[in-house]
Length: 350
Image (tube, rainbow, N blue to C red; front, side, top):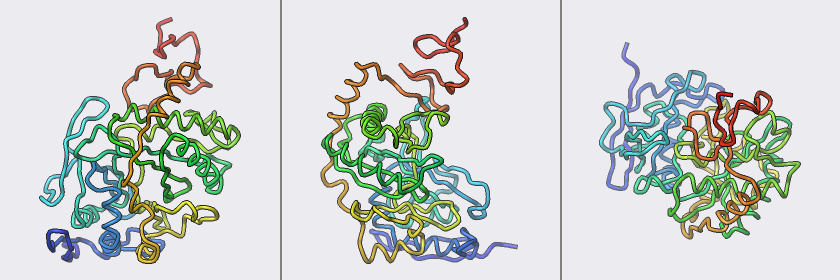
């Protein structure tokens, strides 16, 4: 039996466009009963701020064929049959491999992504027009076991001060889960690895000021009950849920930009697919002017060089990355046998 199908009329900047939506009554989030049709409606209601934050850049789509209880998978390159109103751009990955990646530029493209059973949108930190150079510095504050959202708030305020001292203006959003994402708009003049070094420098400065509350340790066994500054989210093709993106969590929470004066005492669970449209109509988009005055990471790079001179060098990369220059051994400390590794962090034959 053919699945139920409806046709939605979506208002794009260049006119109305019809987008087919199959299985509109399928529950994407069974607990609150939010259907695919309701998600498509949400996509249209938040399209303007969503595209301002996530549009015109490479994006990975996290898709769930039968709602969030089913197994998810990622789409990066446009699937067969992608309509002409969904754009793409050729990107280069850390391996040197290249292929086209989806780019969303209009409301109908977001609705098409919903038709493709997308729940979570993962945008790059760079624009499609210059995919190699990020336009924002991103720092993920990730609560570890024994800590919570309130602890992340304390760290976020301190991180804002660090970035301000480095000449950057910080913006913040909930992750849609337990953490917080701090962004700072930057001029797109440095490639990803350089921006990652700036993130590491900011994280190390934060860690120095809050050693009992914040950690830069990549290995979980060394983090303790602290907020982890996930510096590897600054890498090329390492993404986090975008602003106004839903999350694949039971309550249909949304990764939501907030003003700094909203942060203390905030409950991130209040931001959902059903509540965000009303919030936008009442308080607007706290990130509306985020890209008006991008800063530079020069000061952070000076801190990076200072720390390198003091013996603080490169930090581990994610496991799927090729071995990087100066990277320490990719083995958790409790399993490392020093004699098996050379001074460059490569496995030796000894």
